[in-house]
Length: 426
Image (tube, rainbow, N blue to C red; front, side, top):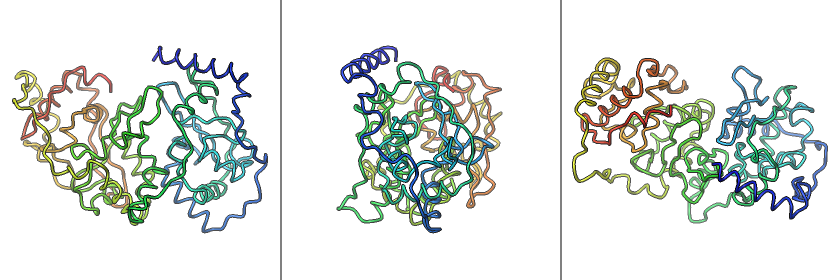
């Protein structure tokens, strides 16, 4: 990271020097826009459409603090480069977007620039929102202008040098961002294209379920192949790999149920995805959820869903002492809910035997759930979900590694052991 920082600094100085400084970098925007908002006469239908789309994009999830006024911003977003604070999206004239025109808002969504033309940090996922149509952008703008204004000033970001400069952002954008509208695939049905638009645009699923390069840009060429969520240390599993979170062999109704209620016969959501279901996808129409399911079921790699996971030729070796220690912890802490044979309890506690989330190569989520607990979202379809309590206060790293090694090596599970080192980032 230190080498990367110096490399980026050199690029910033070269670009800035060659262009004669930040102003010459045209950071104020390609096309000047009027300073004041135009007369924007939104219809009730447009406002309601915008409310729905704001839910699809989970806008409130980042732009609302706990207990704060909706869309007033101020939520800290931790990144490997420092902390970015979400902005005020209410129609307050001084702190919010009250003086923004629909064109200003569209430029922020499509091109990642603020009203004054300054470059926005991609913690605001404009690399995905660039796909949103102008019509949908205007609807979201109309809705945001209808929420109560909040005079909450925007907070200054706390980013390390050189990432705190507009010149660094200009370099990042030159390397990693190109404004592009969504282009429908003429060879696919309308439902599939609707799903692709929602997953790739407002849903910005790749922001978590994709890998990132050393500058934090999503590696779009790898698609929804899974990725570790920076700072949070949750792993967003691959949505194409049948051994992680691929749904190619799931009935569409089960995919819809998972996104609608957080639970389905073959899995449930926890961690950051539980928040997505709670704040966003549970409110989407069945038609849109069905479209997302159609797209996700057709991801490259999906047809291999019936293939068995590759296993090493020789049986995995597990330390007998570790297995004994893990079995004792399991009997004391886990068996009451998950069963003596890891069978779980239908409708309440998930089975651990044969559970693909248990057997994934990436074990970060298992560590997080044991340390911090696992909670499903409360939804209309599952209003009183069961949760798992945290054990991070009573189990040390060796304990967590032992019980996970036992679970991953019992009742037909045959996945590699977990070491104490694997459990340290939690």
